[in-house]
Image 1 (cartoon, one colour):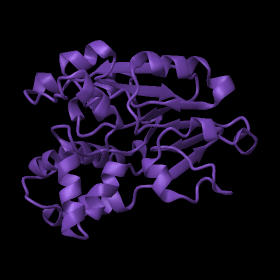
Image 2 (spheres, one colour; image 1 turned 90 degrees about the vertical axis):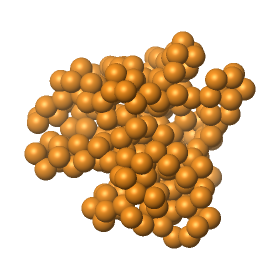
Image 3 (cartoon, one colour; image 1 turned 180 degrees about the horizontal axis):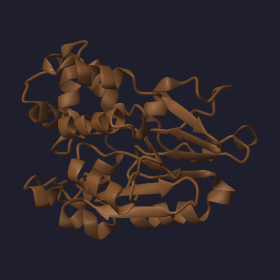
Image 4 (cartoon, helix red, strand yellow; image 1 turned 180 degrees about the vertical axis):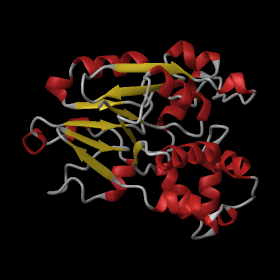
Length: 252
């Protein structure tokens, strides 16, 4: 049995399938998905369908909640939240479902989002979408931080953390940044796995974004595949300017 973590797929179904093929994911393995299944990419509905099909077929797939998943749930509460979601990638999600508002998305998909865990502990790993708030006595207590926090590495309480390693997504990292964190796992005890898969135009990819990353929890290896949605006729493009690129890295 092998165990893998992948994060921030953002509706990039073809890329996700290609990555699973590359790691030869099997019924004997376990897969941990760290949130942000929807928005920005071309096939949010298809991605959730595929995950549900894997689970139905007996594959061990465990799913966490990301901030984009939460935004879609919040979008059902009021018009302000709905507009906020649409401004941050929700339009592509609605398009994949062929509907115009969150309330029209079929119940089984809403149930999928509602049942997502906020974090998981797996042996010496803590799995979370964004990060932890170490200003709390119990860093798991701040659920908002689990979905949204950034720039939290300097606040880590290493006495509380011990020899555990935090695996997370949410903040896109360049390929070399992930490799640098990977090389210092035994000292820093954190690893960001979001390689900005959805940012897949040539400018982003030259900078070291536009790929989906899998981390093997057992042998600690990394596997990358470049965004494969272009081949499906559904290009996923990011802003062109460097300033816009920096903004996108800090956006929701």
